[in-house]
Amino acid sequence: HTDAETDGDAVATLRTPIVAVLGHVDHGKTTLLDRIRGSTVTEGEAGAITQHIGATAVPLETVSELAGSLVDPTDFDLPGLLFIDTPGHHSFSTLRSRGGALADIAVLVVDVNDGFQPQTIEAIDILQRTETPFVVAANKIDTVPGWNPQDDAPIQQSYDAQSDRARETLDERLYELIGELSEHDFSADMYWRVQNFANNVGVVPTSAETGEGVPDVLTVLMGLSQRYLKDAMAIDAEGPGAGTVLEVKEQKGFGTAIDVVLYDGTVRADDTVVVGATGDPIVTDVRALLQPRPLAEIRTEKRFEQVDAVSAAAGLKIAAPDLDDAMAGAPVRVVRDRSREEVVQEVQEELAAIGVTTEEE
Ligand code: GDP
Image (cartoon, rainbow, N blue to C red; front, side, top):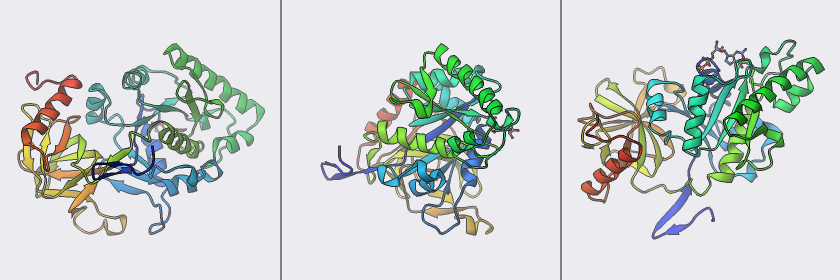
């Protein structure tokens, strides 16, 4: 494979992999996401983190700035990482129970003190079933007695700053976690010892509170994506958009709208879309595409701005008539130059594949 391939007239672009953060309640998913979001470089600089609807984009330049010597940006040609913002959220649990098709790659957050818990096991079963590559963030390492916190440091640097006692305590907890992973049929090891990530899960010690190990999580996600997702990330960015509904909610001035994570192609403001629903799929014309305003303008009365088109991977809000019965976790497809029937059938087949039939609900 090369970066740009031709398929008819369509030129493939490499899109951003979509990352889900999973794990048991209170193990630190939200804090980890906040930490990643908080590591924004000064606005206006190349590579600043941008806020999408329901997602946060971390460009490769930012990953490499945060990861310092861990990442040489010239080793990568994927553009960065797009984190889904709603871990453990209602729509996300719906998505998870419907096959976890949303994310390309995942971070499984496990509290090192608490180990595997019911939602950890639930998440790992989904990752296994969907063959989603993932990394384990062994979180809250700063709670190890005697821990000497190293804000935002790569984990090796943080290890070097600890007493033997603290390091040994952490190692014991990490090995327990590796044992639990192996009970669930995942052979795992500290990520820096993993040679082949296809057979072994990498464990990254982290503190979402202090930021220690967070550069390593970003680095491993980038590496895993580059190694295992590159072919899957080659899309026709101009083609008809495809995405997943994250949430269905009222949008002031627009009626019912859907928050969507777009993983393929483009949605344009004049497109017709097919949306999976509790009844028959909805066929409707886009009224508006909305994205958050840049940070600098956030104090203006309107939080969102209307845009003409959005390309994958991205989070966006689609306002259109008749979206009341749209369903979180369901597919969204742009019709463009295809027949409506064909696209409706595609949506129905996808719903069936993830275990939803329109008769059932
Ligand atoms: P979630 O339910 O998985 O999203 O968990 P949260 O991110 O809400 O975290 C639950 C609690 O654990 C909060 O009080 C956090 O401040 C705390 N927490 C999360 N990560 C860490 C960590 O790395 N170290 C410490 N000491 N506390 C943490």
